[in-house]
Image 1 (spheres, rainbow, N blue to C red):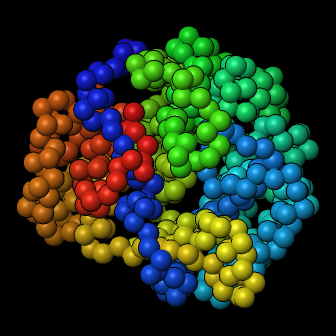
Image 2 (cartoon, one colour):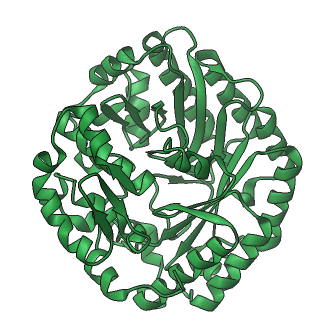
Image 3 (cartoon, rainbow, N blue to C red):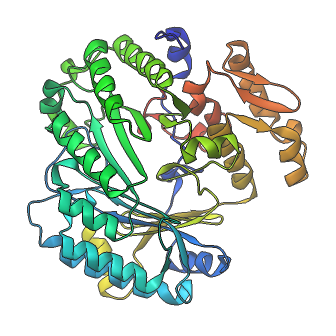
Length: 457
């Protein structure tokens, strides 16, 4: 890329599509799936294989106007203590299904804002997890937590490191004060720099940061300054998200004035500029919105074709079954997705009657599994080895996916993909639009409302 992008291609293929953190997308989850189906999936898990555990902490002390996450904004910090007690009950109910303290290779606390918890609560929660799982010693596990730099003093970072966390993830979005004021997230560079310095000193292995383009008052020049400031901090991974303005769905976004948002051509320019600058600084464009240093595990996993994708995005442990606990948390176990109740009262009420708080889910059939594999390969590796796929599944790709191959023909003519008998390869031109390529293989998308998803670009 050279700082410019083909606006015609973006107009043609940049419409709304799922992000494919799951296939089928979560919009297909249904409430005929319940706790019994989750229990069956957990029992079928290979006991020799370690787990990945996701813990959802929904609380935030203040609202960021752009946010579309499942969260509860409150100043009542005492609410978190009751919530942790419910997490402990959920783990207790899961214990007989999991067996005797299985290995935990990957752990992620997300939200919301996990640093909403006080230090005693953090210790208690990690203790509850350690009762049910065998934690990796040293830094052999990948244990990450999302933090709010505004609520992460040095002693909190020291505690997180002592508890075994070795990765931090947090949002920067934009360093420009005018943008920060418009999105209600005042977070000056000096504050973020302090967090970086402390985290480096404490030995955190990876610092991951988010940027968002398309926010109010952004332009190419101001965002370029934000990128330069971020590069001075040298995070291991950077996510570059497109702001989706959906005020009809997310109430906090109603405080953002549509007239203050950058025009489509400005957003496209910001995106192209940022990709060029990050590549020039030595970051590998992993795909979609993720960048990593060339020596980062994520970039290495992509080279070795072991990269995976789950509800946290790209992962080096894509083969692990993921168990999610907490309100709205999603589990992916074998051919099953399970999601807890998003409503906190419903979540807590289930646990108060000693019932797993499963609200909905999905069991994949054979066709779903084939399509999930195709979409994952395209998203993670930007290509699909057709003969290898055919050998694994004993089928003719050309026959099984004949309608999809026809739909790919315009994309091939436009230079987004290169389709041959032995391979489908996403070109450099098509990498930004890979979600549109994947959507061709999504048999559920044809009958659904695309407006519920964000734009591809």
